[in-house]
Length: 347
Image (cartoon, rainbow, N blue to C red; front, side, top):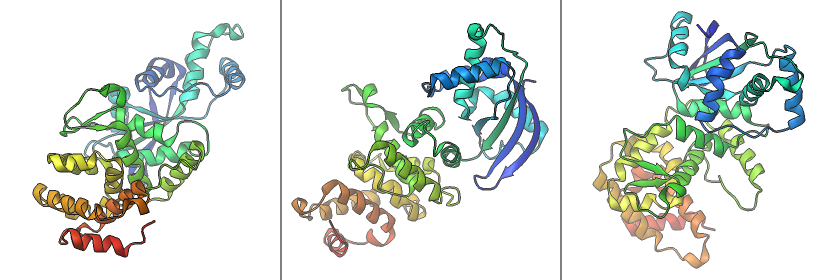
């Protein structure tokens, strides 16, 4: 067995199993390094002098901090004891996600493939310590990912979410296709959503905030602000997963009217935040009823004086307001919804 486990405990914050264990540098080279390339998350070395030093230390037999691996697994399959956990890790290692330690794995690999650095050979049997998370929730996994990486200069929150969307979230069971602008390349793909819009929606959902992009703030600081909001949000306790939101979007997008509405970035962002307060009600809503409500929303929105407001900001804000108050506002006609908008302070 390539991984020896020592303990299994509960992480009550992200409702997951936390394992400690040990393997070898051979495991890092043969099993973990290929996963970096597979997941397309390998980053450039941050400082060549630092990594030269680390490779020298590796060749001289240093012990590095534990690598953190993660699995997202159905709650019925999460192991409860060390024996089952060891079997699970062994059988599913190709599905693991490297949560923390990509640069260290990089350094081990290059110390192994470039031993001429100091004319020494890497001891392939040297111990490599591991922390392993088996998580029931993709959103909770991202929360832990942010807590591990925030305050450093590794991947941005956007990049981490893009990785999750591309490699962990599975949309095969939903009538929804997520494509990048490059994949579209001018082609019309039916029932498809822009990947950038879904990433923004996920950021908004996780941070419980509409303010996920602002041209007045430099990108690095904006990302720090978003990460801070994610850490302060209630994503590990509210019981609502983004996959559930995607499911609703998929259901409602069977309507051409609603699909067109979701194609507006500000609408889908507002929906993804507002739905936290109305998920139970909307999950029971019929397609026709929601379509009628969205048509009333749009008619009311057209009653605003566009020249007097910041259009994109207000669409984002009012779509959130409409969705989070859906149970009450769905009974309103367009004029009554417009009156509700009037009561709000529009910029």
